[in-house]
Image (tube, rainbow, N blue to C red):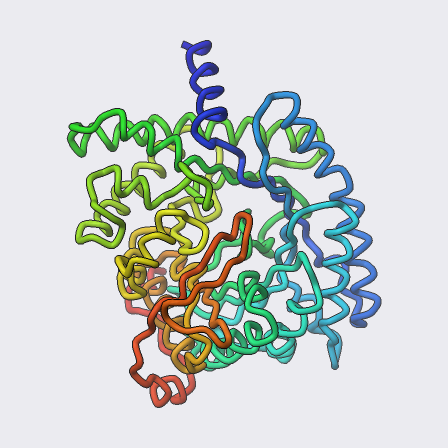
Amino acid sequence: METQQIKETIQMISEENLDIRTITMGISLLDCITGDMATTAQHVYAKIVAKAKDLVPVADAISNEYGIPIVNKRIAVTPVALLAGADPAPDFRLLAQALDDAAKAVGVDLIGGYTATVQNGCTPADLALMTSLPEALATTDRVCASVNVGSTRSGLNMDAIKLMGQVVKDVAAIQPENAMKLVIFANAVEDNPFMAGAFWGVSEGDVAINTGVSGPGVVQRAIADQPEATFETICETIKQTAFKVSRMGQFVGKVAAERLHVPFNIVDLSLAPTPAPGDSVAEILETLGLSHVGTPGTTAALALLNDAVKKGGVMAAERVGGLSGAFIPVSEDANMIAAAKAGHITLEKLEAMTAVCSVGLDMVAVPGSTPASTISGMIADEAAIGMINNKTTAVRVIPVPGKGVGDSIEFGGLFGTAPIMPVNTGDASVFINRGGHIPAPIHSFKN
């Protein structure tokens, strides 16, 4: 049986786009705080380089040794807003540059953690970081940013949501591609290995390894082989497939952690698509029997997929964490791109799908003329779904200057093509300008 599983895994890698989507090293920077931003930035650079200097060579060696593709090597760090609280006038440009320089020095693809967690309120450092985002993302190459604006426990910080609507506009106005590196969360998790929203929470250890696995093509092929199967059979098939995929993720993560002499933390079970043929979450839903993603039944099909992946993966890994669900980024999934271009998928349908999967309105391009208050409304809607359903939701929206519905923007590589999607033209400004906090739901009080 073990020999057969090895053969199946080899086939998955060679024919069905199975890979380790990311090995992400989490690094705590709390011991880098000095009270002076320039000195703190120096300590940040030094610690990241010291801890992660062997990450890329070790990952490459494992990939070559076992024949398992490891697509991305990344770093997640402590939310950097926390590093500036003792500085009366923090200059976050210094931290952003230190992160970018360290990422380049060790050769990782991206570094996440240019982050503020403001679900319950904003410190002066949080506000300084949020307002620094347009310049920080424009002057760095590998830094990713996130802001957590709500949670089930705390409710929604509507002042932060209002601000972030304008920040998203300002980021994209400099260069639309910069908005790909900014995620606005509700219920953000502390051990997420996927970018752009990864950061290393304060409850985590000094350093550890997380892995993120992804195999939409493997799941799609398994379902396609059973065209007349019942839902029960389909669920079992997905669970068994997710088990094999997650086993591989744990194996690679533990080997990497051992060679790097750091703890292994979690496997993230998320199905993360790419624009490559046969690597699409939307194609899985269509293989289940939908003419195209967005058809009535899409949300139910996504719920089935997400639940079965979690059930299979949980049994395979010692510790599961991160987001662990299906991603539905519009520009990073070939079949989602096609559906958006054809008008088969709308922002409203994506919002509904958010209730049963990971993340939310992800890699969505909208007209550059979209008002900041409308973007804030989109953020608030997604955050409300997360708050009420006690799950992670997020917005990664790209208002593309000078472009409207029917146009598209080409990002290339893993980021694909984003059709400009129509946005409801209603005015949310009076609602957004009320300010304050939307209280946590009644079911948040569980003590």
